[in-house]
Length: 228
Image (cartoon, rainbow, N blue to C red; front, top):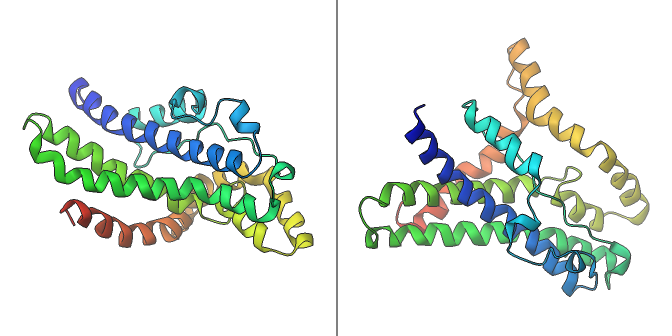
């Protein structure tokens, strides 16, 4: 990959990534604040300033290394928004609403990005390839984040929603999985598929759980921009 191609590819990912994680985390922070917990608000997380949400390692270094090494996927994370359930007006219900706010924001960004594809003809022809690639990848990235974060795996948003629906005793046991959450994700994303390749079995769980919904959602959303 030459320098020009690398810069083109990098910039078409950087803009969607920064917008996706910033709006996702800001949605969590805003909803928690409006539902009674000012913790994130006091920390300056109710903002669209990406600096407030970027995790240097998870948002910059990890995706950057994957991009430079030509990995077939990008993986990363932002700084989690701190939420204190006890401060929410209705902790069980409101925790689910706070969790849902992030994926819903990503769905909204995917819709806006798809609709903006219709505006590409109004820009100079030299800018069209970059705009199309950036907007396409914005749709893709935001849908991936929405679907992925709705999986019921701690510490993803889907686990918070599931916990709010479970009986209190069962929810407490389920919440204890949080301490193993990151290791569980690493195993699902990297280790289990690697093991599957070694034994000749497809164990790419994310391809089933995220790829299948994505294959249905992408054409639907791209049709909003006349590209489906």
